[in-house]
Picture 1 (tube, rainbow, N blue to C red):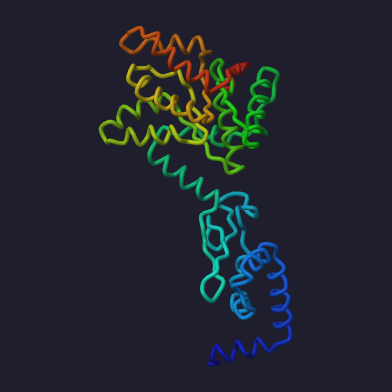
Picture 2: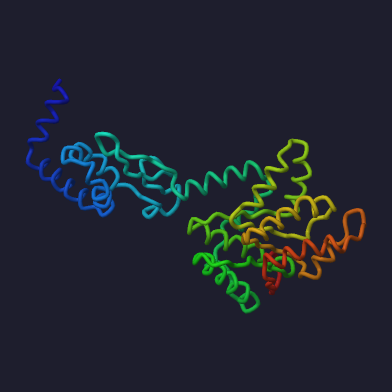
Length: 309
């Protein structure tokens, strides 16, 4: 059997191999990112180091950086799925360091939150919602336009309120949340959609396993939080004042965009929040919550017929 060194020498002497290698070298060193790196470190580099590191430089040029070649995490083209390469200089060579890409960071964060907060699980049609599939009828055009305006302003880094979608059952309020969340995800912006009635039930049970504070903290700090179907729950004084209140207060102070859907308008929701499960009337506490909701979101009525029928 021919030794590997002899095989490599024989291949290296082959004219076609030499031509391909020369072209590969030329293309690699002409890569804009490679050229920037070599220029930045020119005082520490020699021709010998560059030649010795050529395969690492080639490996770098063949991969996607910051997800520009990948449609989604599953379709990642890189050697290590979800990780993109960065050129680094060691003592005597150029090497690669692999860091999590923006999509991988979002996916890891999503999985961590899903493990922590079970009420994140929402219907599949909401998870797959898109503006393209949304019926742009006259009764919902205002809501769609406000959603589009939010996306535009948020991308530009401008301070922007979330939206409070209200209307009858089945008019597509939750679907709108899903469409916004999916549009944000395509731009690698994290958001969290939470079904409020299930969330508040879950928070009560979290006292026993000591995860309550961790869950509240995750909801407080999520870049964009979407609270689906607020007002559908049987509200207790504790869930209103010790769960919902601190989450909304933090997000209001930090100007973190927050979305809501509800069957109630602002006045109806305030009435709902006023009366606890025990029948206690607590107008001042309900007003405090509504102050935060008004500060965080703009009310938008979603009209039309019940599309679930």
